[in-house]
Image 1 (cartoon, rainbow, N blue to C red):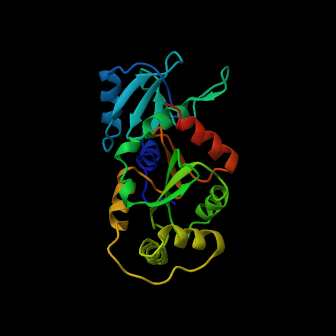
Image 2: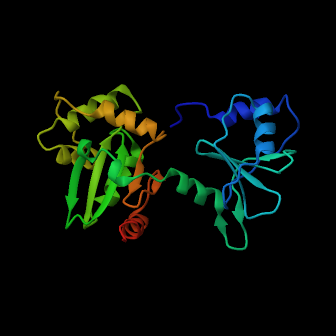
Image 3: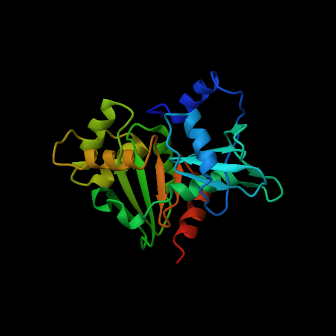
Length: 246
């Protein structure tokens, strides 16, 4: 679910009136300032703020970071590319790899006390899920999680799809057994009983928006890595095991 127009949309519009440029991906390497490149880009695209410019593994191609978005330019700023930069030899999507690095969060700083906590088995592995009660893929995720063992799931009620989502999120949070109310609704469609109480949903929404979470489910693993969207059980198991390693 998109909630705002990205800077790249404005950039594409600006390109229609600017020098003919192209489009493509991301990068790796040590940070360097590149003041001339920065000056040329900011003079051409006056409504963007460049956070970082650094080299890629490929000669003559620089990564430009604007927030968590990445584009590529040559040192002379004759062209610009937007999309995925792939190392064909190693078969690695460098753009996705870099974005995963940029999107990492400090798991210990997440407001786990505001989540609905479900412990399975010894609960040794940990997962945070930002979810909307009316999200189809969140419900599919619950189907994958229901038979998994040795995991603690922190469900953050993140109602962004509709006013009804907010109502259901509140009813689930305020239930006598929030974890059971959430599971009953997501797995079997049992409507949560209407209830009211003090709840942290607004705070969770603020936290999620500050992390640029625009859709659900959004998964955050113990090592701080993030996945936007549904994962099948096999991938969840592998990611949980990997992320819980010391």
